[in-house]
Image 1 (cartoon, rainbow, N blue to C red):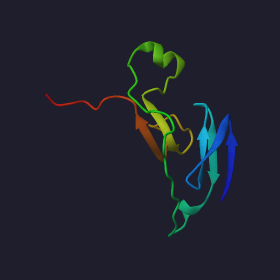
Image 2: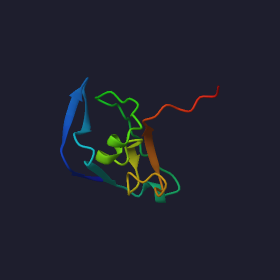
Image 3: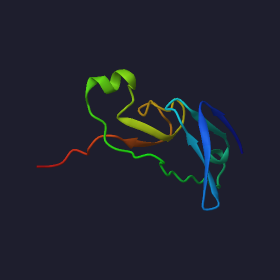
Image 4: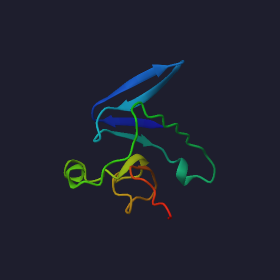
Length: 101
């Protein structure tokens, strides 16, 4: 596999493990693999946020700066921030789940 990184980032090491840490919402890590085209294979990912992930307000001011504020793409096929158009995606939804009353 080959990886390319576009955008600001850092690598963090802790407990003998190193991890990629994007420092911008626009940073992209692309991993070139064909494991999905084979009858067998594994591609493992561990996601550990170094900053708190919390709910986002539904105020318009949030969406003017980041139109995708409600769905934060952790892992996604491109385009990463178009959940409805992605072939594959793992998103963190930044809103409370609707509750039944």
